Length: 465
Ligand code: PHE
Image (cartoon, rainbow, N blue to C red; front, side, top):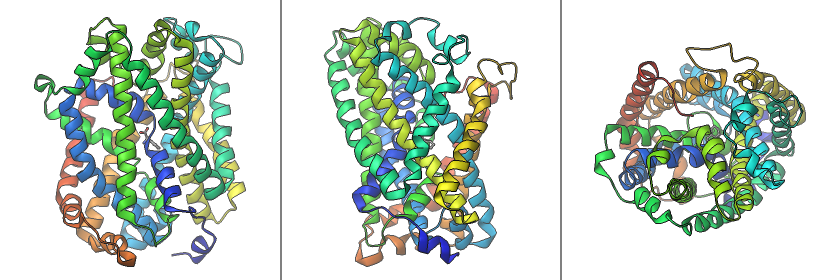
């Protein structure tokens, strides 16, 4: 373990700072555009129940493991896994590659969100609700700068870089302390408004009441897959954030709070989106079950807002909250990569941030132009962005999570985590549960998720990002 990494390492000012920053990473596009769709598709209340049970068992075990490893080793993932077991250095490298794959395309999408936010803010909401608006935008059909996704992608990266440049306390933590509470207020406001729309009640019923006819094993798999993406697991983020956490703080309580935050926002997003779309469709639930990912966010929702009273303002507020959610997530990706560079190359933060940001800008070009000038390229039948999303979320992340369970559960032993949690006299309330999960249940679920998502891709195609 390098002592340089430890002595110069930044840290959160307090437990709340850690919780808000980690929740900032967790709450992202996954909560807003994927969770509501999955809940609608896989049985409403029954999906919510399965998700909740998994969050306090499976999600809890994986997250506490990562945060504990980070806090114990005080290193980002490469060093952290290496110091747990030399033979598992490769796992640190694998985990480190994931943010490098995700960050560029996540920032491309962040740029799209920024563009829609500015559109609604400047009264262009009706134009943005046009049938071909989104397609024209991502296919770079307009010649102007404002209509070019590269422009928005560039600005979005600069926003992230500025925050990370300021370091852990003055950048990441400060941004999270401001943006996360604002996000909560905004989502509550728009949700309440959405619930007052005529016809919204039908959507609320559809979202909350369990519908066993929509329940299948896919409900469980969908929930597992969604969960570890949503909690920013298996990509070194929680290890890095854990490494900035004080050893005095109550780890178990912090992890529970991050989970509550993440699940709560996902739940509210569903309560906002499902009734709004159902009301828009005049009580029909077909559209809400079919709309997912970017099609929902940039295709359906602008139309829904445009049809409401005060739609321009609602759209602006909504895209602002999406922007905050996306920003705190991409900041965590950038911070994780910068931290890896600092730890392993011993560069200063300034140099690391600038070089990494420029690198991301270059790496993101294929994803940004993949639906336009580069659309002739297809990787396994997918555009660049969808391909990177598939490789990271459906292949690499389950593998890294699975191997982490094997390492902690069967090779180094669960005591590395337990002893870290119990540090300073804290009681590890869910220790037994954690052990069973990490040794047996989580690896099995992850293996099934891995197999099914790969099989699904080849059998059906059209994976939802
Ligand atoms: N947890 C984030 C979400 O729900 C996803 C994410 C992925 C965040 C990668 C950071 C990095 O959208």
